[in-house]
Image (cartoon, rainbow, N blue to C red; front, top):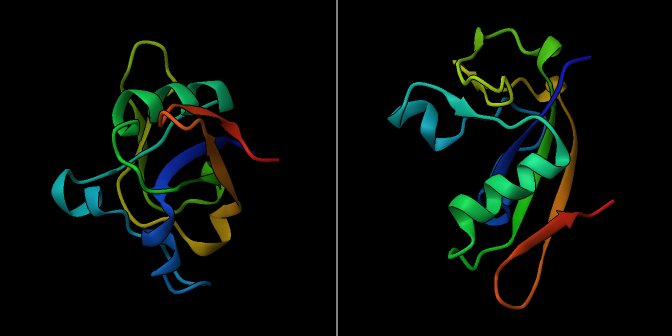
Length: 111
């Protein structure tokens, strides 16, 4: 299993039909879905890009080996996969809330 995470606002995920493939908005705007390897790195990513967004966030835990769309890793550290298609429902192995402090700072994934 090749584990990675995708951050999604909780309201977006709630609007998603369970059991169907998931298409993040960036699939249309950028041609791929952003992912991040590692729980600590996904928290750093959340703070870098979404700290000012007051919505609740979730981390989709994805098995990249179960994704049938092509995916690439283009960064030097090798921790930011880009999935060039929808995430099959079967590839999403868990959905975990991302906990925050009162100031909006993301602190950890909820077990």
